[in-house]
Length: 274
Image (cartoon, rainbow, N blue to C red; front, side, top):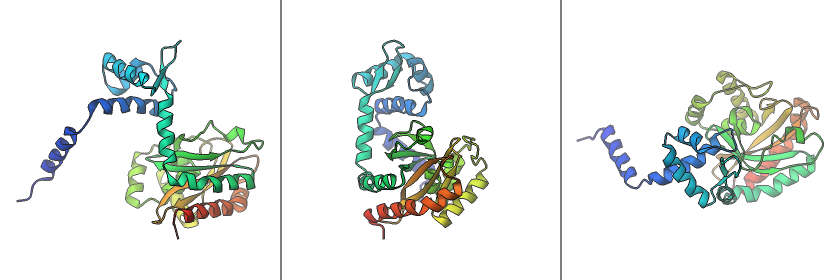
């Protein structure tokens, strides 16, 4: 006798709930709300509304997270921000990625040789997450820094890093992510039609190079290439960023795409890709 899919799914949900910690889920949801919000600080009422919890319940969780160092309260506004313990967890996770440790010398060398800022990121849902940055003090770079740091998130669809990662996803995974994306104009040349983005990703798969020509922000141009692991799967991407006054898009690709690709290939080789 074949059991229905719905019955099997119900039993699986029950099994999961039997080992599920609702308190832990709520605590993590509070921390995630800060990451999803455009504000650095949030009050208890805002958190309560975002999570659908009562104010008293939210306050209890917030007080516990604050006492443990995962949140901090501003003495004047009484609002909360993420605390240093969250940073400790984030950096521990990043440092556990072998790719980050292996990549740093290559990224720094590329930055030193070119005089431009070099970044590495991974794909997390519809966003890219920066896992390494090699900044340069070269004139003009400050204007495109955008206050980015390790752990920063940006929409994948309007960044060279993101497009380099999206372009090499299997079709079902790409279709799923595109279905979740809202292509909002961020810069003068943002691609806002999904058909056009698909065509762009196809070109990137063919050429092996992704370009951001003021799609994320005015003045920012970058060129990116994918990094592959031992299995050949694209696991990260690196880019080189410049200000529009420094190089045209054509010059950026012609002069620096080969160096970016060589660096990506060197890191891929260290990860075991042949």
